[in-house]
Length: 419
Image 1 (cartoon, helix red, strand yellow):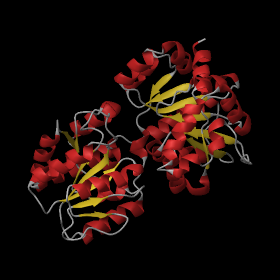
Image 2 (cartoon, rainbow, N blue to C red):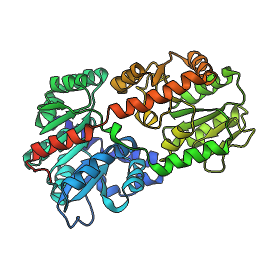
Image 3 (cartoon, rainbow, N blue to C red):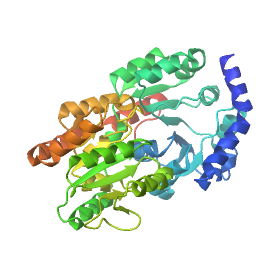
Image 4 (cartoon, helix red, strand yellow):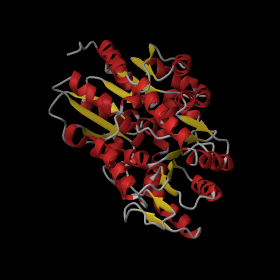
């Protein structure tokens, strides 16, 4: 009954969904591309049997790389179908995987749309990254005897409380999963309490993502071009944070430190440019040129270059954490050996953040003033900055191996022997 009501609400909301897509398409016309796919209508089928992996947006798409490569090696002769929900995620898929995968949008979670999806692609099994739980999708997969695995799964205490309020709807969905590969033991416990079984702790696949060599080279080239100038990166900043970071940078009282701002969402690049102009700052856009000697702020208005920014930076602040937004993942920074400062709000990445702090790869600050003080201390204390650099590399290396564990779990669940 709960799923029936949920489906009815979804159908009634369809006009609002279309309006939302239209609104988003004002800034990103790509939201109106491949529109039929969002309701389960697709073009040509892959010629090979299909293994399906769902990654909702950019972060999950990039994080899935070692798992996709493992699936391709373990199940040769199959096509990998990569689904997502956003144009930026789809663009990231093209950049990372090229023609090695088939890309499509996952349909909205209505019974007819998900039935068309499964009828069209007939996947042998499916893997959903992190915490994508769609009741009709999961119920239809179970009805069609398609194994469905939740991989790299995480669930914060806050999200678990939210799910509990709709337990009549989500508990059967979690219970219908064939298996769940959790990132940490606390994640596993919360997922089990919501009905998921079996649940295994496999670790975080993002530790297995190797920064692209060409991007690391690009970052090194930028560093040489800056001729020893100190750089402070604010990575994946969210709305409202750029102003706080600029304030903290001003309080450094170190005018030669270049601040690199990289907003999380590309649709906000113009908004942040307006902010910099309004602040009267001397800024350059990554898309236009490298920083000049007098450049105060370099705006990273590019996609897919975070490894280059982390390689360049002497110190990074990870966005989404100064305001109560849950933070962003610091694993890529660690893999590049970049010391990290992070704000108080990291409930979406609690374990990775706490582990990084314990390892000496990251430090927490409580507000913009503390951010400024800690950044100044580290940028003027080379020995501590170097120690954090080495700690970050060790931290990243020690946590690898989740992909192999996840692939073994998938093989057991699907009955497929390792090749």
